[in-house]
Length: 340
Image (tube, rainbow, N blue to C red; front, side):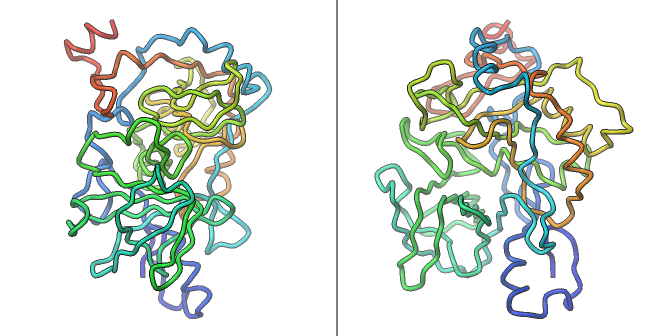
């Protein structure tokens, strides 16, 4: 069997409990496609996949950093090993098996959720803890969704006979740059997809992770910036809005003695693609996939990154259409004309 992208002897999963918990750990992304499928993780020109090294610093950068206690806080990887090897921290996702029966899901925020059927089953990997995210990639076309559909739900509970329920849910065509309707939530507070922003083992191990990383903040204001579609904040304009993007200073370094190859890859990603504020939670916690292969040293080394070494950038010049995640790409004439 395959668990977390690593071959595991059949004897590892001999009990009913072990078989159930192993479904919480799934393959990590590799390159620009979901492994085992032909599906991209959104088009190459999507804003998640666009470098931000030359974008200007946002005029509210200093204010937002102060609200996030950047001067006294370090980043915290919200994934990695746990006390139970079969259930690592992080957000799992799965490739939907052929023949999966799609089911109806009832939502707390029904008016803002995708109302079609979901490939949710008793075997679906659901995140441990209070958020209970479920991320499902279906590479096959169905009667209700296109090929390469990404389904995500929050506060997810599978129940048989069409009685499954969740807090909210969304569906994306991974071949498309289309965003959610403005004002609608998703499985996170910003109305964005979760899967494209996760730190994943395969990419980090390969030495290249070519997309932004999602992170959380305790205080967000009642507004959102493209490409976010939804806010869940408070009446405090000193806090950043959902969708705010932050970049690690290019001059910041950590020595290889305390930041090995995995750590250096994440540093490079944060300098090139940055972080996108996607949900409410602990300040400067950034998310990754649940994978048994993460080691304590690989995640703990990332805790040495000071939040004070980040700036918020203004990425509004990248926008092609407010309802699309398509972004102008560095080096093109359109980018130079819009972003300088």
